Amino acid sequence: MNPGVEQVFPPQGFSLRWYANLANRHGFIDAARLTLILAFVSTIVSVVVGLLAGVAITRFSFPGKDLVLTVLLSPLIVPQVVVGMAFLVTLSSLGVVTSVISLAILHCVITLPFAARVIVSALAASSRSLEEAAQSLGASPARAFLSVTVPMIRPGLVAAAIFAFVTSFENFTASQFLVWDRTTLPVELYNFVQTESDPTAAALSSLILLPVVLLVLVFNNFIGQQMFSRK
Amino acid sequence: MRALARYLIFLGPAAVVIGFFAFTMSVMVRTSFAPSLGPAIVGEGYTLSNYAQFVGSSFYLGYLFRSMWIAFYCTAITTVLGFLIAYFMYRSGPRTRLVIGVLLIVQFFTAYVIRTYAVMLVIGRTGILNSTLLDLGIIQQPLSLLFTEFGVAIGMVLVSLPFMVFPIFASLQSIPPNAEMAAASLGAGNTRIFWQIIVPLSMPGVAAGVVIVYLFELTSYIVPGILGGGYVDMIANLIYAKAMQSFDHPFAAAAAVVTLLVSGMTIYLLQKSFRLLSPRT
Image 1: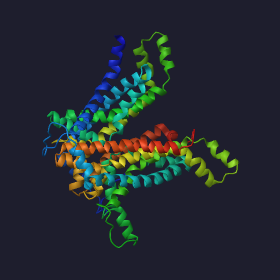
Image 2: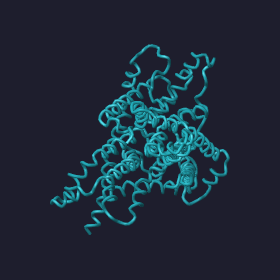
Image 3: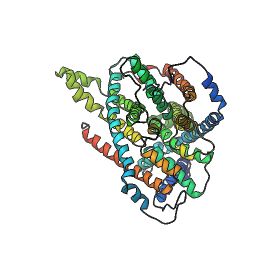
Image 4: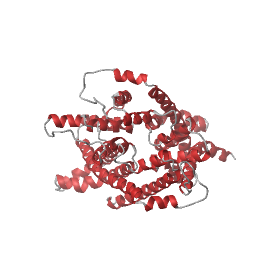
């Protein structure tokens, strides 16, 4: 259904004051900053870690490969609320105070399976023969990988990065267990929606929504109708 | 030795991240067996009292059963609607597909909180839905949809739809176009083609969608939280409340473990039954 956040009430005239209000409420700005930091960190971590593990799974031969992949993807089947709960309980029982680091680890755990899944399928689909050809021409395995395979799977890497970023950015249910004085944007938004009823939340939502819509439309112009046309 | 270094470098980091995950999960399981000695005080030793408290009380079990029931009928509705949308996309020309596709993809990138908030705006007292219905004269007073199970159900379906449409559409796209032509040339009418060719061949997509959506709805926190406003709490809300408001970690942990077990079993049963329903390939 349409995520479009149009007008809250039959519009009593257009006004930008709710957007201005956003800037005044430091809570939102700080939350946005934290959310962005977490998203960047977990994206970089999960893409790198996912790539390394993906290479091992698709290129090396060792017993129990399927098991490794399953374990790598296991956080996906655990409900968000359980993951958040688990982190909270662990921190509490260790006597550790929640901080950016604990939130970052949480986000990495959550985003890694998403990134890994995309990367592994990209790697699996990429042909090894080109890489082997480069090696037979004298390139070291590392060089062959970096110069041949990585550019080949670049769309997959980009997709993985996008998935990871979005997953971290929008995460609410698990993150809410680990917030303290500082919150993430979704948590801040949720709390605001629960307690106040002015359209500031709508302004925030629109701000987040607009780039997304633009991005998708721009993407479509490049990828074209490939995604939806018949084969 | 060199081989070991290779595995360490490539699989090590992943092992670390998953290690954190496994560690937190095991601490949670351990805590579920710990006696709860008051707010934020977790005792030593082991006990089944948390589980007994959860399973033995119709109040707490009620959360679980209500969640399972809501998730069940919401998933059913989502499946039907999702199939219709996917099928419509399948039968449409490229431009319509693009428009619907973009609408759906945008939702993937929009946070649940925002989408649920959007639903809240639409079905609220002063929202678009009520305004339209009032203007059309269909109702005299605004419908009170928020804070009711009905409102939560609406939200669940709307928020879950993209997860259902895409797998089904992907499945539909993988149906060889010749199949329909072959059936038609053998004399099958449209209805027959639909029910005996298209639906069975779309089952893998339907199965994937159902599993994803049911699990999501069963353990949903945001939708009942925002649209239910405390009146339609589901199991995830209970876990959060017990952990962050009552500070009863052992009990919340036990509830979480039970939820996890129920989720796991549900995935298993759903996949098993869909395998039975799928045509032999």
